[in-house]
Length: 240
Image (cartoon, rainbow, N blue to C red):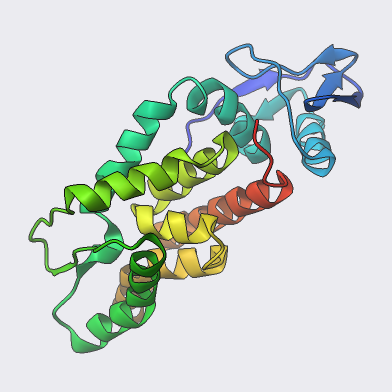
């Protein structure tokens, strides 16, 4: 879960400021800065409006959890741009621990469901990137080839900072680099990502019943995936 952070509200109105490099937000005529002090630049006016309205939530205290689009936009400038190389390497590490590469042997119906949902994504990635992706049953560690890792690196390196931010968000949420790549490339939807990432948990729920806290966590995850996907869509695929 996200930590609880808040700040006191000190403004009464907002304006969207257009420039040659995008849109910024002014609150009581002062430009919005990210937590690290960068000027927030948005590539799409609709997204800028959404973020401005997040910042205009009524009340003296604003919880960061109520500003998911602002958090994502700030992450682009504060985390991803200055740490691009490190982030890409961290994402590549998931290729060998990727959720959809580790399959169950039993029960048979779970194993079949995993194959049905996960294998088409693996097959698609292998086809478009011309790579081999190793999969296994159980928890035996796998090692992807140096060639596969190199091609994945080059593919991710070509992403603009917005795509890289969304990819990082999805991978950290789901434990799957390959689900993230398939979402970025529009092979699957945010709903597909959620269902694929929660396949084992949903199976356990059907067997043993719903756990309230687990259900709440899944709802948060589903919302986070949807917001990240919409953030990408609204960003108009433009490079910062």
